[in-house]
Length: 271
Image (cartoon, rainbow, N blue to C red; front, side, top):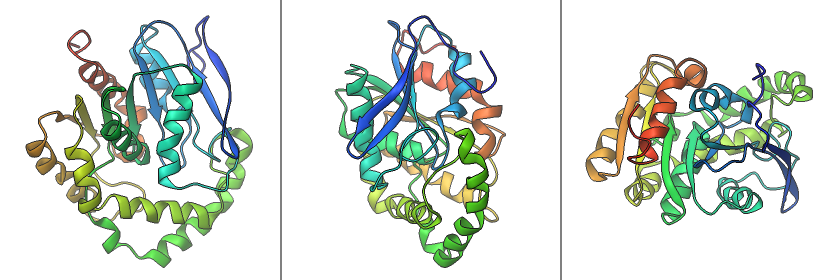
């Protein structure tokens, strides 16, 4: 396996999947194993999952893709959350996958939670990595300050885009997407979604802060899961790891891989 890629197999397929007005860059290792669909963070790419995938190994079928205007995927006129949820169906249909285990990190955890909640017959299990935690954090955010932050980061995105490592959304589009995430993270919005999940679901939570958070804000957000677990026996907190939000896929990938084993059911649950 190269440092920045998914370990290839003889059956690996890499290509573009047309969806609406765009095309999504998809990689599918193929094979007879349980399909695992990986859902990225807000502006992250499919490369972020390489250590988790390497730890799980070739007995699983790994499907990764870049969301619209991220990584090598094309731009679109629609970057809404609902579109990202629908794109899960498009990717699975393109790869002829009827049922999959979904795993998401950060923003992708929200996508995974919604898709699992809406598609119980198609979901083998779900793993939510430091995301999809119901909390009204958007009420504590300086919205104009958030917009300014994304404008300041736009130069960095320009530098990283040629390497497929950053979003090609504008600063305003990224800010709008971030603000929308705060709205669907609200307890009244996300709580019922999580309560409706009927498949094995495991959380892997980070520690400390995340990008843009202050003080103990992130830990207060994570604490909201205690009530979720009490209400829904299908959902469990698999682990709280020492790394922070931004480093969790890089430093604590063994815990994430173990959670995938558990969410897949009894044949894969022991690790």
